[in-house]
Length: 153
Image (cartoon, rainbow, N blue to C red; front, side, top):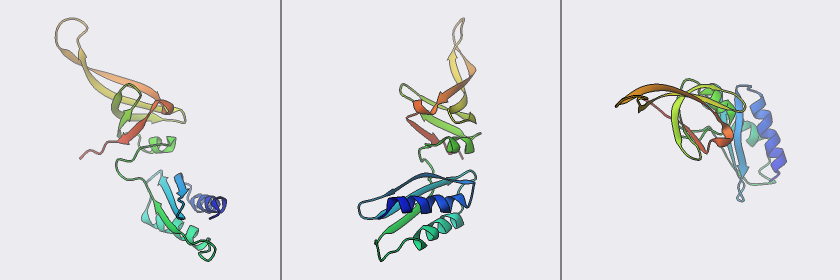
């Protein structure tokens, strides 16, 4: 299986819709092509079908027998690209860092990192008891080990 040709076909298919972007792709030793795509507004099933057909119709099964799987990330999938964080601004993110886990609303996301906002209960500076404080922190993508959007009902 010619991986350069497969990569080119994937890029051509995705380029037809600027709202889509490639997260990952691979070819297994058994010639199973797996393509994972996402979109700024999600990924309609029609786009999954279009990309699948484009790749499949431009490869020759006579040369290489293969299977093809095109999908989008499901609920609970780890966010890996800045564009995925940006499309989820306003939603709650659980970010696992080296030393802690932070759960907060995505306020902003750029190419370097994400800004999270949350409220926390902390001891009062003076006296007994706790107060609610607002926190905001910029976290670099390089420091995030795992990032999951929390689904709330």
